[in-house]
Structure formats: C-alpha cells, structure tokens
Image 1 (cartoon, rainbow, N blue to C red):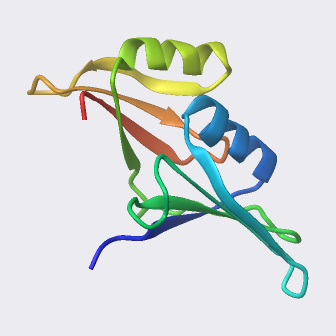
Image 2: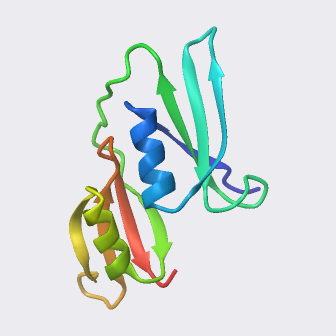
Length: 127
C-alpha cells in the first residue's frame, strides 16, 4: 500500500495552478472537467502518479468558498535551498509567513508559506 494523493478544494483553479506549477515547481499531470456535476480536477506533483504522492486540486464551478476548519495542519515539501526558494516565492507575491530558519529546539531549517487559498505548506531544507 501507499498514499496516492491529497485533495484540496480551491477557489480559483488558475491561481492555484500558477502557485503549485510555476512557483512550487510541480508539474500538471492531468486535468479533467466533469460537466454533469460541474467540477474540475487537476492533479499536480513532482513525479508521476504511479510512483509519487500528488495533490488533487478540486474546483467546484458553483459555490467554491470554503471554511478551512481548525483540523487541517499543513503539507510538507522538501527543498534544496530554502532561503533562495522562499525569496523567489516572496518576489512572486506568495505569503511566506514563517521565514526560513531553524525549527524551535532543533537544527532542521524550515519555513511556512500559504497557497492562494490559505492552505499552509511547510518547506523543509535538505529533504
């Protein structure tokens, strides 16, 4: 067994694809519209779906404003050079709300960024 994907409901599919593909460096693996039920699915990731866990971005055509709740934590993504990666994110308008630096009580360098829908993403250097 393995984890296949995590699904996030998004309010603006184009903004989310720009963030995950252009800024975070993922690839758009596939996208499909369901006209009968009025939604679009876009799967993005760093590797193919056969070998990697990916994100499913779900855009509902009608009501698409969501209460994020208080149970969601974050997605974690490993990066090589967290300082330059975060600098690029900020230069492109992303909200890096926890700047790069060592985790409290440790040596691992982390940062946190929000995607266009406000979902938290932890960046971990060297993973």
